[in-house]
Length: 309
Image (cartoon, rainbow, N blue to C red):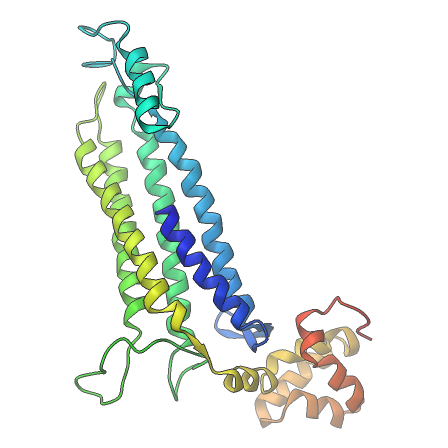
């Protein structure tokens, strides 16, 4: 799974480099916010999954502690006293990993907390992956009545009812994998909670759920990379038009004319359809040269670089 996540991360990074100069509008709460680049958006996806690779590698270490020689409830009855030490060494030789016998075998026989933690990390991975797929579907919505900032690869012949309609089927199938993984986390939680006294008898469904989630996520990561991310293209003009026609860029005027005047400009722009730059110029708040400088991509994307005023 960690390898598949790294594979997807590289796909995000390639798109981040390809789209590094594509200016677009950032959005919060589905409303215009401030400008950014499409490359930075994809870079964020790469950083998000990179963080989760680290969590996967961390939690993997937890399964190196094993319950060996505990027998029925962990007391070691009917087990040779040297058995745990001998098998621990053999496991290390065979696997190359530092397996170790649990310090308290009675605790290890009944405590399945490690599975809860592993499942929680898988749920985290699935939740964030699904969020990215939601973003991809939204950014590619349209083509005429949505955002249409990016084009996803066409992976189906079209709708059986609406000729020419192509749906975002790859992000959708990955969404469904993620929903299943999130549901499996509930199964693992209940199975681990349901153990009574000195033994948890529900480990089979825990194992099934964890392995199933790992296998599905691994396949989903590779599918998303190969059949979606690698083939995405940008609609650069649409992205830039959103920026320069947006009321949100009035935020860039804040340091120069103040919040109240900026808010007033935004209100008039919304009512009249005029651009915020034209209104600012008409009111005499700033000169055309000052406005042009403020609204250059370099200043909007890196407001603290160099002289802004």
